[in-house]
Image (cartoon, rainbow, N blue to C red):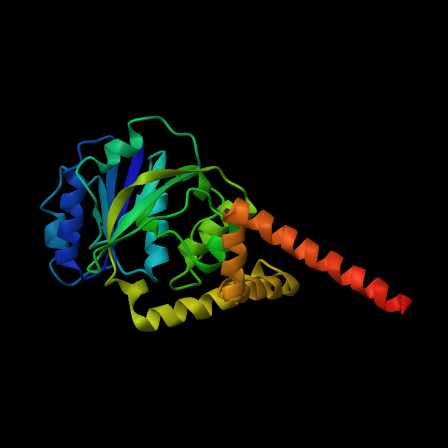
Length: 274
């Protein structure tokens, strides 16, 4: 089986129905669909039971948070790749999965872009992932396909509330140098009204990142990164980047600086002789 799509839900019957419909309408059908419900008391179970032919596996029981629920889904999954599409999120188009899997892939991580609702904007990710990008940002899980074997030895850290998908991505890309492929298409409609998008949650994300980073990086490295990112926000950094991208101007400035240095040395020699 090529893919396992996993949806985590808690008391979001309306969002769950939207997610289910976007998944079962896919033209690509080589996948299983798993729903992990946290013991909802709204109409979520009623909706799940409406699609017995489309939902491969489902459970409804209390859990210890979103990452505990996602890890449950991982343990039930049988697909080569895993996609986490939570209640309220939707695949962008009916042929999204077909566009991703029309060709064979062997990379550990596939990722694409995401459409953010209700803001109605596209987040386009870089084709090359760097430590600088991952230090400040992340890729939302709705646009990532993980090979299931990545989770054999390591799953999502359940001790964090909101950043464990970022930690997992950081561990795989930075510390394990796993292979990845950027797929230049919009994978999902990401519901920005979810837990990790709330103002209080954004503050918690910052705090959890501050707690996590010293567990992977020495203090000296973190100090250098903080200095680097402060410089990135300065006008000086923008000037340097502009010069790097403008070959002719860069050569002119280099020649100008070299000329100024030579003039300075020349006049210093004259001054020393007088």
